[in-house]
Length: 298
DNA sequence: ACTACCTGCCGTCAACATTC
DNA sequence: GAATGTTGACGGCAGGTAGT
Image (cartoon, rainbow, N blue to C red; front, side, top):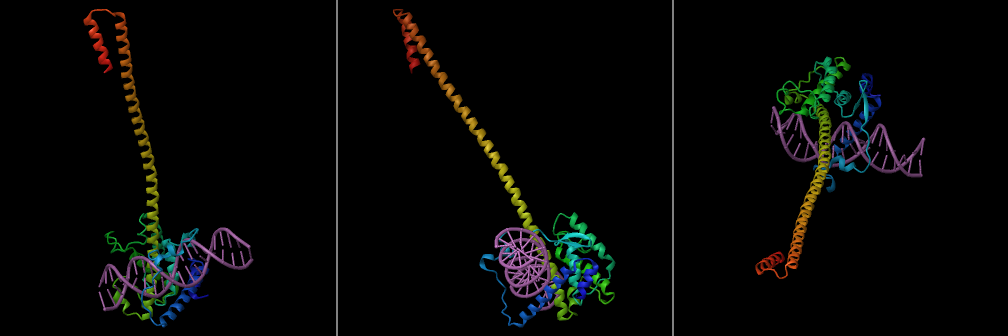
């Protein structure tokens, strides 16, 4: 078993199987990539099939079903693969394979960094702020660069861990500032290893952000669907009330019409009765009765 | 038990954007 | 202009599940 795997296992951070797999995969990939670089450079960005552009893995692999996230045992606690503690622990082993890792003299802060990340992950609602802010970044949230925070955090934690393991094999400090001045002193391979490590961390962070973004969108969809259902019910209720009011108005009108008809009928009956009672009465009286009848008819 | 298939996650590359 | 950050794409593995 490779030394880094043994070390990782001894640390109890990640299972040896996981690490062996990771390292084997990485070595395979490195071999593959080296082979690839030997090939004539075709250059040009890799492009996805036209129907998959912009979709990433989600579309590429989206066909069916779902799988629970894989939990891993880290420091005696079961953690999600996206958990910052797991990422940090994972990076310990990954970084230990980088021969040129430069340590920061803060090995005693490793456990604190882990617990800080854990508490932060639990307390901060924004998924972006997973790693502790550096002192220079704590002054303003707007200027926050999460990925840099994570890199710094991981660099500190993982480098310290390696230092503890290697017992003084690694001497040079990995100062977090002045990037170009330090890396210019490194060999191509060292720079490459550093770049790979940073990109590894960045990819994790990127995926985490994307997941958070998608989850946020899904939550919005759910919320809007519920809101839509509620509003539709409201519309139905109001529309029902409206139709009831219209029906009431219609019935009232009908009542009024019936009342009018009733009054008409009653009036005609009275006039007829009066005419019958005075068939030869005085002319004036008859005239007025007839005019009443006429007005009723009109 | 074996196999095929699928998803989630990972590390890496490449291209582009941003920072210094 | 180099170093660094970001992210889509790719290939690979682990682990779950259904069919045999």
